[in-house]
Image (cartoon, rainbow, N blue to C red):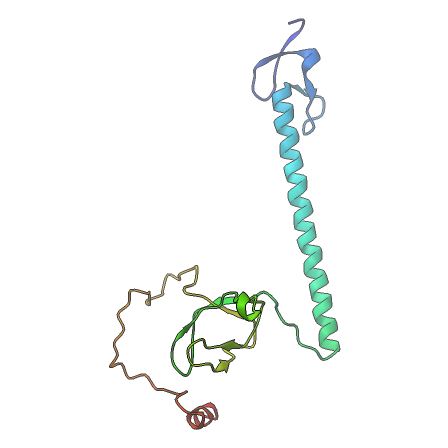
Length: 172
């Protein structure tokens, strides 16, 4: 080595001619490895800042678009469906959404669901939903799990047994 120099970051020796200027500390020369790491850290920080700015811009654009829809008297509809455990209100069969290419159904975002057991169509919510076997999260206060025993004798009202009971109960 012509001019051995200790790196200000890692203290390893390098030839002064092989060193690089620190981008974060003006006037400091560091070894190439530390220079590469510093450059990667700065690029990462810039990318994070750019991504946060993009998110901020997208939120602003979304707010403006929602305001304009409101001015036009149109509701804003989320297109990303919410995963939800669904049961048919008539026959209580669990409803799990999946593509059915043989019927020309690719499972796009949707609000109404058709029971594959009894054939009724119902809307569980005013947002797009996706019937799933189970949800991915669990709350700390949740007490029902797939292993929770079902007691057939539980007194559960059948609000959807006939259209008349639905109308009667819906108006209450």
